[in-house]
Image 1 (cartoon, rainbow, N blue to C red):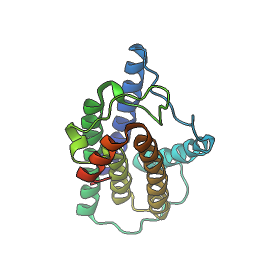
Image 2 (image 1 turned 90 degrees about the vertical axis):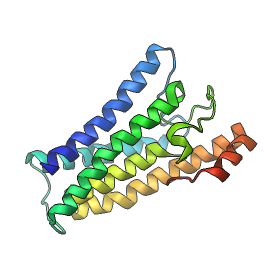
Image 3 (image 1 turned 30 degrees about the horizontal axis):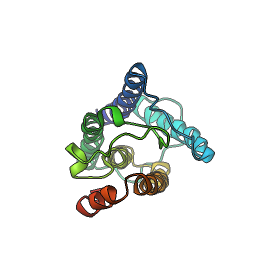
Length: 188
Protein backbone atom coordinates (compact mmCIF):
# COMPACT_ATOMS: atom_id res chain seq x y z
CA UNK A 1 0.00 0.00 0.00
CA UNK A 2 2.77 2.47 0.91
CA UNK A 3 4.46 1.87 -2.44
CA UNK A 4 1.32 2.80 -4.37
CA UNK A 5 0.81 5.96 -2.33
CA UNK A 6 4.42 7.00 -2.91
CA UNK A 7 4.01 6.50 -6.66
CA UNK A 8 0.68 8.34 -6.63
CA UNK A 9 2.24 11.33 -4.89
CA UNK A 10 4.76 11.87 -7.67
CA UNK A 11 1.95 11.67 -10.23
CA UNK A 12 -0.01 14.28 -8.27
CA UNK A 13 3.00 16.57 -8.00
CA UNK A 14 3.83 16.59 -11.67
CA UNK A 15 0.20 16.68 -12.77
CA UNK A 16 -0.32 19.89 -10.81
CA UNK A 17 2.76 21.46 -12.41
CA UNK A 18 1.67 20.43 -15.91
CA UNK A 19 -1.93 21.60 -15.42
CA UNK A 20 -0.80 24.96 -14.02
CA UNK A 21 1.60 25.44 -16.92
CA UNK A 22 -1.16 24.66 -19.44
CA UNK A 23 -3.66 26.88 -17.59
CA UNK A 24 -1.22 29.79 -17.72
CA UNK A 25 -0.58 29.17 -21.41
CA UNK A 26 -4.34 29.53 -22.04
CA UNK A 27 -4.12 32.90 -20.26
CA UNK A 28 -1.29 33.95 -22.59
CA UNK A 29 1.50 33.43 -20.05
CA UNK A 30 4.48 31.28 -21.00
CA UNK A 31 5.38 29.61 -17.69
CA UNK A 32 7.94 27.13 -19.04
CA UNK A 33 11.33 28.85 -18.78
CA UNK A 34 13.30 25.71 -17.92
CA UNK A 35 16.76 25.70 -19.51
CA UNK A 36 16.51 29.22 -20.91
CA UNK A 37 19.41 30.58 -18.85
CA UNK A 38 21.57 27.51 -18.46
CA UNK A 39 21.56 24.78 -21.08
CA UNK A 40 23.09 22.31 -18.60
CA UNK A 41 19.59 22.12 -17.07
CA UNK A 42 18.78 19.72 -19.90
CA UNK A 43 21.02 17.14 -18.23
CA UNK A 44 18.43 16.85 -15.43
CA UNK A 45 15.49 15.18 -17.29
CA UNK A 46 17.25 11.85 -18.05
CA UNK A 47 18.13 11.44 -14.37
CA UNK A 48 14.59 12.44 -13.36
CA UNK A 49 13.05 9.94 -15.78
CA UNK A 50 15.28 7.18 -14.42
CA UNK A 51 14.24 8.15 -10.90
CA UNK A 52 10.53 8.02 -11.85
CA UNK A 53 11.05 4.64 -13.44
CA UNK A 54 12.73 3.32 -10.29
CA UNK A 55 9.79 4.47 -8.16
CA UNK A 56 7.18 2.94 -10.44
CA UNK A 57 9.20 -0.21 -11.05
CA UNK A 58 9.50 -0.80 -7.32
CA UNK A 59 5.83 0.02 -6.69
CA UNK A 60 4.42 -2.12 -9.50
CA UNK A 61 7.04 -4.89 -9.74
CA UNK A 62 8.35 -3.85 -13.16
CA UNK A 63 11.81 -4.97 -14.27
CA UNK A 64 14.50 -2.85 -12.69
CA UNK A 65 18.07 -2.90 -11.51
CA UNK A 66 18.72 -5.21 -8.57
CA UNK A 67 17.01 -3.75 -5.53
CA UNK A 68 18.61 -4.11 -2.14
CA UNK A 69 16.71 -2.67 0.80
CA UNK A 70 18.88 -0.88 3.35
CA UNK A 71 16.24 -1.41 6.03
CA UNK A 72 12.59 -2.38 6.32
CA UNK A 73 10.55 -0.87 9.14
CA UNK A 74 6.81 -0.57 8.68
CA UNK A 75 6.31 2.68 10.60
CA UNK A 76 9.25 4.30 8.79
CA UNK A 77 7.60 3.39 5.49
CA UNK A 78 4.36 5.06 6.68
CA UNK A 79 6.36 8.13 7.73
CA UNK A 80 7.65 8.19 4.15
CA UNK A 81 4.07 8.09 2.88
CA UNK A 82 3.28 11.08 5.10
CA UNK A 83 6.14 13.07 3.51
CA UNK A 84 5.09 11.94 0.03
CA UNK A 85 1.50 13.07 0.61
CA UNK A 86 2.45 16.36 2.25
CA UNK A 87 4.38 17.26 -0.92
CA UNK A 88 1.33 17.75 -3.19
CA UNK A 89 -0.34 19.77 -0.41
CA UNK A 90 2.68 22.10 -0.21
CA UNK A 91 2.74 22.40 -3.98
CA UNK A 92 -0.99 23.14 -4.15
CA UNK A 93 -0.67 25.88 -1.51
CA UNK A 94 2.28 27.30 -3.47
CA UNK A 95 0.35 27.31 -6.73
CA UNK A 96 -2.59 29.03 -5.06
CA UNK A 97 -0.32 31.73 -3.64
CA UNK A 98 1.56 32.12 -6.92
CA UNK A 99 -1.59 32.49 -9.01
CA UNK A 100 -0.37 33.80 -12.40
CA UNK A 101 3.22 34.34 -11.20
CA UNK A 102 4.18 30.64 -11.38
CA UNK A 103 7.13 29.86 -13.65
CA UNK A 104 9.35 26.85 -14.22
CA UNK A 105 12.75 28.49 -14.36
CA UNK A 106 13.58 32.19 -14.28
CA UNK A 107 11.48 34.54 -16.41
CA UNK A 108 13.78 37.51 -16.96
CA UNK A 109 11.54 39.12 -19.57
CA UNK A 110 8.18 39.05 -17.77
CA UNK A 111 8.71 38.77 -14.04
CA UNK A 112 5.55 39.23 -12.05
CA UNK A 113 5.10 40.69 -8.57
CA UNK A 114 7.03 39.31 -5.62
CA UNK A 115 4.86 36.77 -3.78
CA UNK A 116 5.29 36.97 -0.01
CA UNK A 117 1.90 35.87 1.32
CA UNK A 118 0.15 32.53 1.72
CA UNK A 119 2.61 29.71 2.19
CA UNK A 120 5.39 32.06 1.05
CA UNK A 121 5.04 33.83 4.41
CA UNK A 122 6.54 30.67 5.99
CA UNK A 123 9.07 29.57 3.36
CA UNK A 124 10.64 31.42 0.45
CA UNK A 125 10.79 28.16 -1.50
CA UNK A 126 7.83 25.94 -0.57
CA UNK A 127 7.79 24.24 -3.98
CA UNK A 128 11.37 23.10 -3.51
CA UNK A 129 10.56 22.03 0.04
CA UNK A 130 7.76 19.91 -1.46
CA UNK A 131 10.21 18.26 -3.85
CA UNK A 132 12.70 17.59 -1.06
CA UNK A 133 9.90 16.07 1.04
CA UNK A 134 8.94 13.72 -1.77
CA UNK A 135 12.54 12.59 -2.32
CA UNK A 136 12.98 11.91 1.38
CA UNK A 137 9.59 10.25 1.70
CA UNK A 138 10.12 8.00 -1.27
CA UNK A 139 13.46 6.91 0.13
CA UNK A 140 11.72 5.92 3.37
CA UNK A 141 9.19 3.88 1.36
CA UNK A 142 11.79 2.40 -1.02
CA UNK A 143 15.00 2.38 1.08
CA UNK A 144 17.59 1.43 -1.52
CA UNK A 145 21.14 2.63 -2.07
CA UNK A 146 20.34 4.19 -5.41
CA UNK A 147 17.54 6.33 -3.98
CA UNK A 148 19.83 7.30 -1.12
CA UNK A 149 22.30 8.62 -3.71
CA UNK A 150 19.51 10.57 -5.40
CA UNK A 151 18.74 12.58 -2.25
CA UNK A 152 21.99 14.61 -2.05
CA UNK A 153 22.01 14.96 -5.83
CA UNK A 154 18.46 16.32 -5.80
CA UNK A 155 19.20 18.64 -2.87
CA UNK A 156 22.27 19.96 -4.71
CA UNK A 157 20.29 20.62 -7.92
CA UNK A 158 17.45 22.27 -6.00
CA UNK A 159 19.81 24.44 -3.95
CA UNK A 160 21.69 25.45 -7.11
CA UNK A 161 18.40 26.61 -8.65
CA UNK A 162 17.37 28.46 -5.47
CA UNK A 163 20.65 30.39 -5.48
CA UNK A 164 20.12 31.34 -9.15
CA UNK A 165 16.60 32.52 -8.42
CA UNK A 166 17.74 34.48 -5.36
CA UNK A 167 20.36 36.31 -7.42
CA UNK A 168 17.70 37.28 -9.97
CA UNK A 169 15.19 38.31 -7.29
CA UNK A 170 17.80 40.49 -5.52
CA UNK A 171 18.61 42.25 -8.78
CA UNK A 172 14.99 42.65 -9.86
CA UNK A 173 13.20 43.49 -6.58
CA UNK A 174 16.13 44.90 -4.60
CA UNK A 175 15.26 46.11 -1.09
CA UNK A 176 11.78 44.54 -1.17
CA UNK A 177 13.29 41.08 -1.66
CA UNK A 178 16.03 41.65 0.93
CA UNK A 179 13.39 42.67 3.49
CA UNK A 180 11.44 39.53 2.65
CA UNK A 181 14.60 37.42 3.11
CA UNK A 182 15.13 38.91 6.55
CA UNK A 183 11.60 37.87 7.62
CA UNK A 184 11.25 34.44 5.98
CA UNK A 185 13.67 31.50 5.89
CA UNK A 186 14.96 30.05 2.64
CA UNK A 187 13.44 26.60 3.17
CA UNK A 188 11.76 25.98 6.56
